[in-house]
Length: 183
Image 1 (cartoon, rainbow, N blue to C red):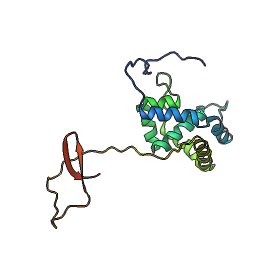
Image 2: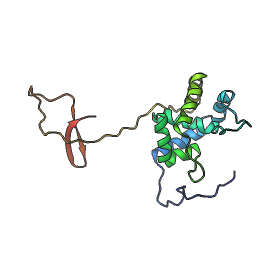
Image 3: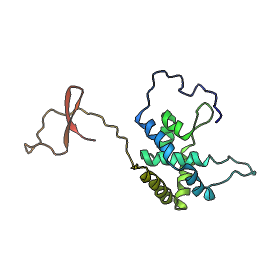
Image 4: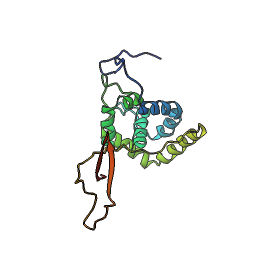
């Protein structure tokens, strides 16, 4: 394996980093998902570079990895592009070094997703990955990242009828309790 020279975009200079849960999850998926088999399944449908010009297609495995990120983290096409710019762990999983290349844009991601949908490959990929993971005692399900904001509300816990509003909830942040609506 050829070792690439570090660019200023890499975070190899961070002395006090520790792996995050996301990094550990992606490292596990990197080793257990049968990438070569899945790429072989998609390759007959994937556009090839032509000598007629135009931009060559993004790498098949890279696009498949981006598609998996979308499924695992419940990301839309624009959201996965944004997440790849934002998350070092996701860029490392996909194999993107921002010092050398940009992230595939949301339209490229959308076209790949449509290619999988049009050729009914998503179900085949899901089944194949599911079999491999079950064989290793693993299961991956769709997740959602939630951004919760605590908003101040009146201190009264009673509504006009004199009873507690069933849509109001309480939460503790630090040593202080907050009462308000869950959004």
